[in-house]
Image (cartoon, rainbow, N blue to C red; front, side, top):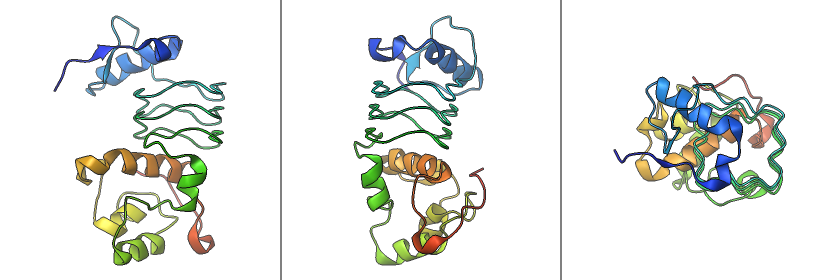
Length: 181
């Protein structure tokens, strides 16, 4: 694994960011950016006003971004694995894969399910939020993000964060049931 790079200026101004990276490191997760000697503390920018913020390539694993204003924020390349996006305002945001929320909502399985059978299995499982019964498991048999092909992990993590945050419409009105675990 490559050594972490310094925190770029565009995210260094967020006081919670370096502490969150230190918290990830303390939990045995190697963050992309070097937290230096920051105190380890999980990021909790709940209800934060991050309108038009540039969080590109930020490591937001396990961050609580619920109710945060991420409107028009740049999240391109950000790591949203296990991030809580429930009630976050993502209108106009650029998500990690470069698409907007409205593009994700128009086709939430784009790039994830290319075979018609996989699409149907994913749709049939819509609303389930554990790895054993979620659309990604139904479509591909994946039981964790690590099971997904490396080139699809950004898409899968983004899907799960948006799906668990209830930002993706349920085909046929299926209800959301519980969180990925």
